[in-house]
Structures are given as C-alpha cells and as structure tokens.
Amino acid sequence: MQWYEGPHNAFVQGLLVDLRDAVWNLKPERADLEHALGDAVMQLNEQKKEATTLKKELAVHLCNNARLKKLERERLVLFLLCVCVCHKPLYCLPHALRRKPWRCIVYLSAILC
Image 1 (cartoon, rainbow, N blue to C red):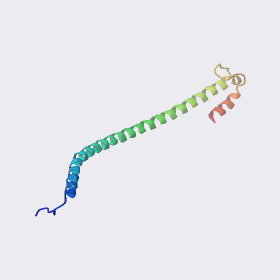
Image 2: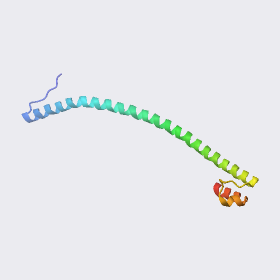
Image 3: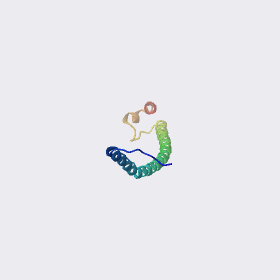
Image 4: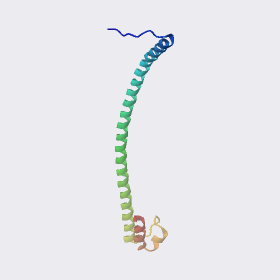
C-alpha cells in the first residue's frame, strides 16, 4: 500500500513542498527548544532549593535577632534597677533620672511599653 495523491496544479504542489520544507526546518528548532526547556527546568529546581535554604537561614537569623533584642532589653532593665537600688547618679542616664531614682521606674515602664 502506498500513499496516493491525485494530480495537483502547480500552485498546490508548490504549497505542499513549501509546507514540507517548513516542517522539516522546524524539527531542529523544536529539539533546541526542548533542550533549552530542560535546562530552564533544572535551573528552576536549583533556584527553588536555594530559596528554601535561604528561607531557613532567614528564619534562624530572625530568631537570633529576636533573642538578642530581648537580651538587650533585659540588660537595660537590670542596669536601671541597679541604678535605682544603688541611688548613684550615672553619666549615661538622662539628667532627670540622676536626681530622683524613683523616676527609673517611670523610665523603665516607658521603655518597655
């Protein structure tokens, strides 16, 4: 069994030949595009892995940052309590706190709230 096509005029015959040539020319381009698509998928997967790694690192840094802020706040509270208990004016405190130690409590509540 063979393919049979009836006689065609010159226009249809030229059109079919042009169509065949266009299809044959597109086959290598398709292979190139499939290869490029495979590369893009691999790069995307690598970037997804990198993004998840960076998200985990960011979560760790945010947790450490929150802990550090909490420790700094606690340090300040302890420092101010020591100043209030000792009643010693220090150069690093605001001027109003140097004169009346009871104002340390007000200052502390303003910082913590």
